[in-house]
Amino acid sequence: MQKLERIFNKTAGSNQIYEAVLFVQNTGGDFSYSKGHGGRDIDSPLLMASITKLFTTSCILALQEQGRLSLDDGIAKYFDKAVLEGLHVYKGKEYSFALTISDLLFQVSGLPDVYEEGNNNAKNRVINEDFYLTFNESVEFAKKLNPHFAPHTMKRAHYADINFDMLGEILEKVMGLPLSEVYKKFIFEPVGLKNTYLPESENNFVPKIYYKDKAIHRPKFVMSSRASSGCVTTARELMIFIKAFFGGELFDKLIFDRLSSYNKLQASMWPICYGGGYMRIPLNGVATFFRGKGEIKGHSGSTGSFAFYYPVKDLFFVGDLNQMANAALPIKLSMRIAMTTI
Image (cartoon, rainbow, N blue to C red):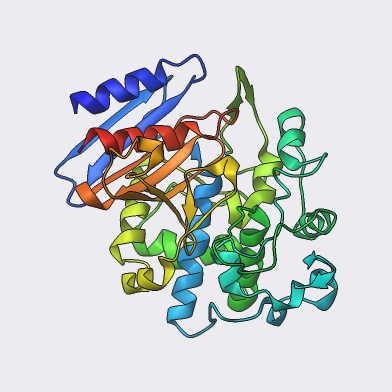
């Protein structure tokens, strides 16, 4: 606990961090550490950002278990021709209709990231203004950008929110329900999450986030992020979820054998690899000077959120640094926590 205290204090003491929270537990909960900074605690609302992808993954896997979809399904089964046509054209060949649910889940579609790429990317816009981006608008933006490779090219993955935006649309079509209700049915109700939600109107609270030293409020953009980055939770409930995700409470955890095919993401996201709907960060490589053991698995978000499991020590760590100017911060903190427990 003293080591965790030092790590958290050093991180929170950075001139980049104005609010932060860390919550660490083992599976049984008999080891537990939590601390907040800047008025935050484990019951303060936090923006999940891309950790929302784990919700989407959970629902996709639960529906596969029920036989209502397959990871091998072509996405052409779920989208009109007009939506897909021209979405993935690589070296003159159209791959849009060859994409599968698996390609989206594993981030091996090769599709570009509307959030990060292009001269008018969503990230640069959201720093300066709040705006709503519909799914169809995201698709049209993606069509104007170049794919990075043909789908499921060996050892290639490219992180792109559009993959999970499409998975969210598939969930709604299979279930015939709004995405918020899908999450409620497969996640919130089964594990008892009372303060976790997908914002759908201005009546839903959306936390402010920091970009450098400026606190900005972007409820419209958060509401448009949906299946890729849209949920709000607390550290306490994020801990409940991440334990359920890796503990087999939401779907048969034997499926992880099939999901544990990992590919390195684009260089800007090193050392993160991506499996079937979640991140994996090896701790025994160059990034740790070969001093670590095993791996951490879970997800981080571009606004500073994180939720990881370290199997070697049976530890879960979740929280938020609430700083979107440096997306590497939660990854570095999570790796540091795991390394400290060795």
